[in-house]
Length: 106
Image (cartoon, rainbow, N blue to C red; front, side, top):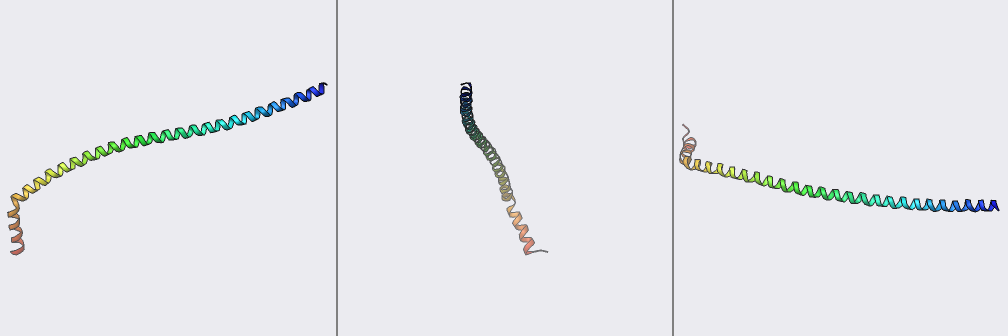
């Protein structure tokens, strides 16, 4: 009887070991899936953060650029007014001088 009990104990231990191995394998697969899902969630989170930051920087850069364009337009406007005033003051003299140079080069 002792040998039969020993054989039954060995068989029962083997069954328990197989059950534990199957549970461990299942747990390992479940943990891998959880890690994959967690990694995907983190990836999406960081991509969203990056998109948000890019949008913020784009807004700041657009505001900066618009300001610089306004400054350049103001400067250009002032310079054009100055040139137009200079042209109005000297137009007749310049026309006479160009005419004299072209028609009467002596």
